[in-house]
Amino acid sequence: NTAIAIAKEVGPAFKDGFWRTGRFSADSAFAADDKLGNGADCVTEVDRYIEKTVFSRLREIYPTHKLVGEETTTECGNEYKVTNDPTWIVDPVDGTNNFVHHFQYTGISIGLAINKEPVVGVVYLPILDELYTAAHGQGAFMNGQPLPIIRPPVLTTPTSLAECSMVCEHGSDRSEKVMGSRLASFTRLLLDKKHGGGCIQNLRVLGAACPDITLVAKGVAECYWEIGPHAWDFAAAVIILTESGGAVFDGAGWWGSSIPESERTLKPHNIWNRRLIAVRFIPDLPGKPGSGRELQKQLAKDVLEIVEDIPYPP
Ligand code: IPD
Image 1 (cartoon, rainbow, N blue to C red):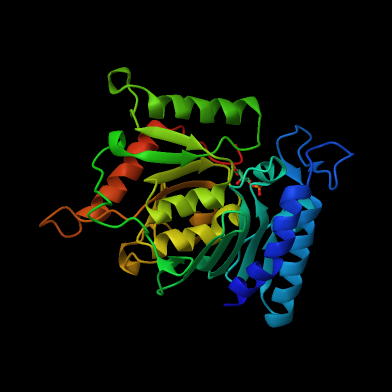
Image 2 (tube, rainbow, N blue to C red):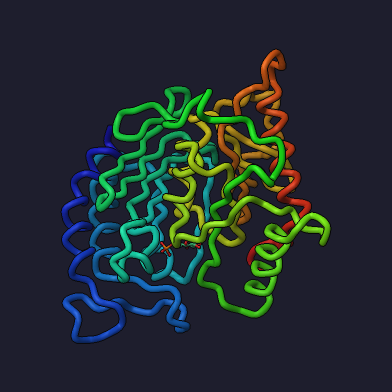
């Protein structure tokens, strides 16, 4: 409830800034700054204002909790750690690139991790008027409606990548090694099976990681894959996804708040290792209890076999 109230409090500043922020021209009402010096990663006054406000509200209410935020971290030389302490992980504007281009797919992400496990998540997309919320063991919701929004029998059980829609990101690291690896992976995911590809039904690159993961939680995409997202890009969205019945994977295993603890093989500290596959809730096949979970694992394995799963940073 605290995270929801704070996200709603900063919503008007987000909406106002969305229509007034310019790109890189100094003539704009609020010009964006270029963080990496390559034009691809930007920050605006709105990012800074929202992060400051969210942090100050959280400090008032939970003075002993740790805070990790995208903009504060950047200002402090990019060092951050998710420890066992209760830690709020905040992206004031996820998809700043979309924000400065007035593309509505952007939002505020407020997550809480305890013992390194995501336990509370609020993703607010003010321009689309979508509020995603979840808390461990309490389900996930969009504007109060339980997730996934698309449910069986409309939500089907994909048995191969050819039936899957994937959201992914090209990210803002434009170095040859990282971009080469991402693009090679995109190619292989799309390529025909007879040429060694996964022939995935489609790939979407929409420019913001946390709304991507909420699409998976909603049931309108089967999976999300990215190399290089930061904790603040997915902390909140991951609990929203897993409370909707989805799971997250890397080469080392899988994790989900709705998966029995004894079956989780991805250790909590590995959730933050900046390579993530997220798979949506998959209904069991008729007469085959547990088959949905098996198919989630299989799809993640299929993706992992195809993509170049480089450690990040490389
Ligand atoms: C970025 C976006 C982008 C993703 C990057 C993120 P930001 O967030 O979510 O789609 O590829 O990994 O860092 O910097 O706009 O908050």
